[in-house]
Image 1 (cartoon, protein in one colour):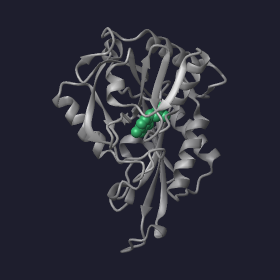
Image 2 (cartoon, protein in one colour):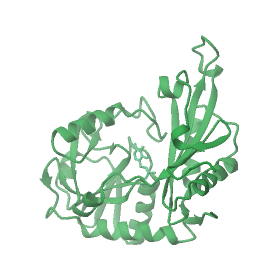
Image 3 (cartoon, rainbow, N blue to C red):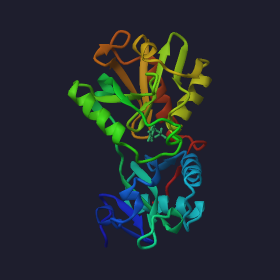
Image 4 (cartoon, helix red, strand yellow):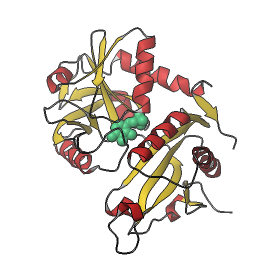
Length: 297
Ligand SMILES: *Cc1c(COP(=O)(O)O)cnc(C)c1O
């Protein structure tokens, strides 16, 4: 029996242990970061909002003029099969489409056969258990996020050099992670997460220059349910620094408190009550049949 306990991958029409999954070096996904991907998750043996992740993945492929020989239904079943084979109850499930290999010697993207691959690995957290308890110190990076005029940020992509350099900058300043800015210095997003700030009864999140996170969307829905005022707008750094509460959202962790911005305490410097309430509500939705589907192991 093949051992999938460290994770299972689907590539070239086969299921293999994730450590054995490989792509050729000439694939443009590797050589040009010419790829799109998505990350869904299973929690306590159930997929969360899987159809929303699939919608986003298909929209991304369409915007990049990619197509794969698997239907949406087939991709959905592959995701279930990967989690089943791995036996993981809590899994991080990534689906990827790369541009693939061009015709030999060609630089014409139309000659590429797009590649689909996917994998399920143990659930990944953006922030450690301790940081999710105490709150993160989030650096407002001097790094500008690739502008939406260059690359549509609604397409989940591997253009991460700005994010990675921002992480180095954060660690140089003893911060835990970084949020990048646009050309005017407004906050946009960080490596794999969206950002929210609360001022009194108003909760703000950047309206542009960001990936439309499924977690972000879930939190926006929960905020409306709680009768809080929600504003999707530009988020100047000064507004974030003066916030009563700041939190970040991601599939890889849910709702995580930020208690310092560039080293300075947010509010009283403790994780906010709304953050904790939203995080509890977010995880509670994972057992709700309206938001999640069971995996038949
Ligand atoms: C994945 C990602 C997010 C968070 O999106 P979720 O769907 O909530 O996981 C935010 N920003 C970027 C750049 C991302 O890649």
